[in-house]
Amino acid sequence: MALLHLLLAQAAADPTKGLTAIGRGIVYGGAAIGPGIGIGLVVGNAITAMARQPESAGTVRTTMFLGIAFTEALALFGFVLAFIISG
Image 1: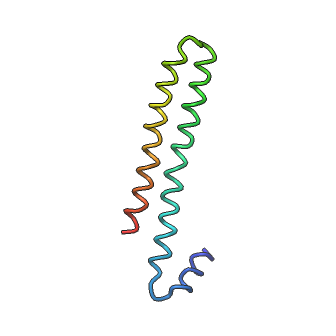
Image 2: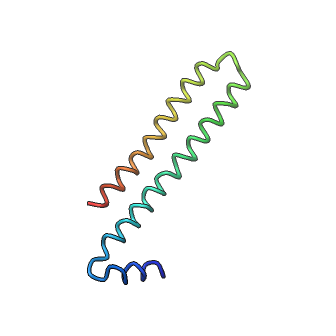
């Protein structure tokens, strides 16, 4: 709350720039948490699968990279959304 008052005191005429920057940071930070957890789960489970059945490592690795790509797309959507918010 004190940060909000400080921002309003700094830019008393137009506080939207500072508040928009804070909003963009919150949006992208929130959008990056999910894919980070998702990629960790995908890679961890792929390593477990490769350790249990080494003969299928090639197929598991390919599927893992596809999962990482789809999960990372969510972070890119959040990045784009942060720029859309700025107007």
